[in-house]
Amino acid sequence: MKNSSFLSFPNIPEEFLLLNPAPSEPQAPTIEILQSIDQKAKTVKLMCLAYNYRPGGATVKWEGGSELFTERRTENGNYEASNHFTVPLVNWEEGKDYTCKVEHTRTNTNIIKKTSSKGPCSPPTPLSAFLLPPSLEDLFIAQKATVTCLVTGMTTPTGLEVLWSRGSGGQLEVTTGEPVPQANGTYNAVSVLKLCVEDWTAGETFTCTVKHKDAPSAIVKTIRKDHGMKNGGEMKGRGSRCVREGY
Image (cartoon, rainbow, N blue to C red; front, side, top):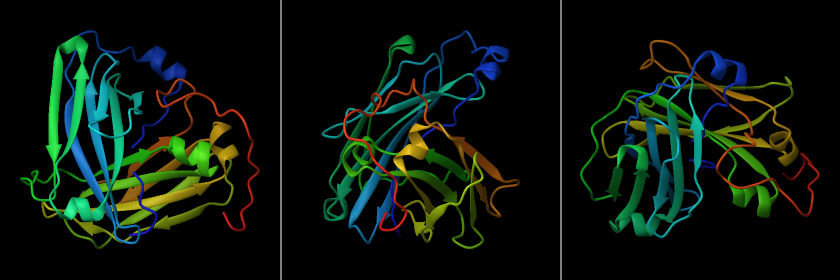
């Protein structure tokens, strides 16, 4: 699979939030761990996802991994958060355990969830799509930006269509990998959109539309840089000029 990288969440317009206040009763998060294998890079990308909780303020951490994570409010007023961890494929194949910790103080939630290649399989879940923002490593160090659309839960690897669009209507550079079989019998696929750093930091919107026979209708996910997102501050220091050739 090419250029695999892992969720982020659609930016919700302020006027929508004003018309749709968050539910008042606290609700504990649901936790899932997703995996995506990149055979070319010999790595496995793990995503620990907490979703459908309220109010905000959850923490999602990988033991031995990055302390950085994203948290966003969704269209229904609840929250979603994720943390991503890349591990060597050889360690994954050896059956090493990886541990995610999720805390949500308002509901006294403290969950520890482990995953490994040899662990029990999670039951199949309905087809879903997630959007992942550029990593801080890409933005600060590599001076590039990639937005990833992760499709999970396909019962068959055939018939997947992933379409991208952007608010400005400009050209797009997209790489979509082949669906990869998972331990629970389903398939995951990753589609990566390459951007200039300026495209992302300017706040332009990007949309991923997923079509597959497992979904009764198209799944549409939209994302843009959220200046309130919990994944670090503004980029400072050396600037970057986007050059398409050799990106």
